[in-house]
Length: 502
Ligand code: SF4
Ligand code: SF4
Image (cartoon, rainbow, N blue to C red; front, side, top):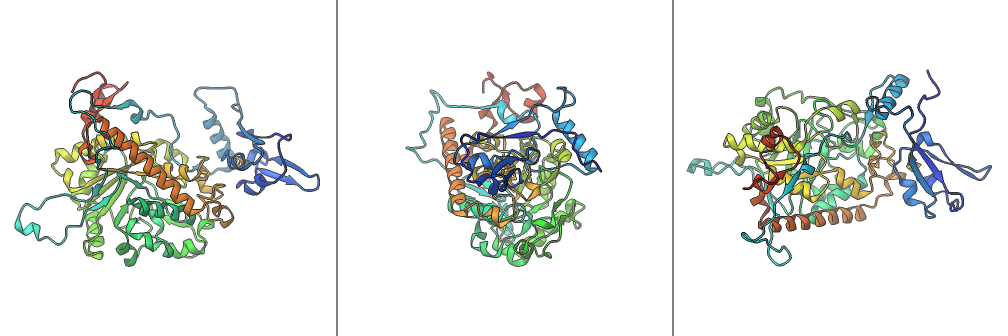
């Protein structure tokens, strides 16, 4: 067993002793024990090898005495053998384990959103000023299939549409993978803004049932926390088949994160690993999925729309068509930039497809088959701004899920160490000393502000296009133009190149 790593630390913690007032805040707050204090010598020092560059110490240091530097590559620079590959190989040579990581795919694949540009009105079809004229962002989720006969109109198995005040919802993040404080921040903000948060696969804590009317309650392969009361309390039920960060594989929340309240919510013994199987053991076909959708609707007297969440993969359009025909009201598609609390690095970085291509392919397929109105399409996976949201809706989505952006709003610095449970920012942890750093009231306010800012920007972009309702933008790809995309990409996205006229 090697005791000495062949790799020098990735980061260096540098303290300016002229500024440091020895308040020891960094020692107390570092989640990774990188900051140390030697009481005997009255000396502060850093263990660089422990630092994950979460920037907590830098942010809280009242004297501004700390800086974290990224160290130069540990070996001679090589375009093929990048630093990431070298570090991974050495780590695996030392541990023999699977590489784990958190958050979303960070590899330099081209973001299609950055190669799409929006239209704006000029002389004709004049633009609309959202500050002076009404602008509708309310979005209705669910099946819009119209009854075509008197018999069909009496059909009691039609689930109601669910309105959200902005086409942005909070994506699935389970209690257990994130702290109660982070979870509550999301729930409070969703309620205040009139949108939905998503329980993820960890159930809904008893004390947060007052927010259930704004919850998408997930039913995942592990069935954690699923009971009749939970299904009936939520606004939408979501069957989770896959997620963008780890398509095709299950989940694993280590026993250390299964504290008593997490265990109670998940309905599993305290301290045991929460293992979600890769498949649902009762779903091996579209017919099986249809059966589960039917079961969930029966259990909730057809009052809850059922969403099915899948990862964006190569044949996503055909899969979505099957899901729509199986009776789902909503299809949520998670692109390969989607985040997670823990995933094998190789899966996260190399499996799946970009959400932009998936939205376009699914919307196109459902339209061609004449079943687009049977489902709402919710897109997820790395939405960074209101412009990404507008482009996704123009490509064909009804609404989007955001998650990483919400965590950044709560303080996350994307250190990707969520799977350790040591998050210095109180987000991806169950340690009360750390999670207390996040005040749910303040967290909710920050999330509300984020939604408010993005929603206003969406209104401005819509107004610029001369559109006064978000529903009029859905799938309206004429409002998009591609830049630097090849023929195949333009065809898949269904957009013209910049410079081409209507
Ligand atoms: S708080 Fe974060 S950035 Fe600061 S030393 Fe610890 S791990 Fe590094
Ligand atoms: S949630 Fe916490 S541990 Fe995860 S990336 Fe953000 S700061 Fe790091």
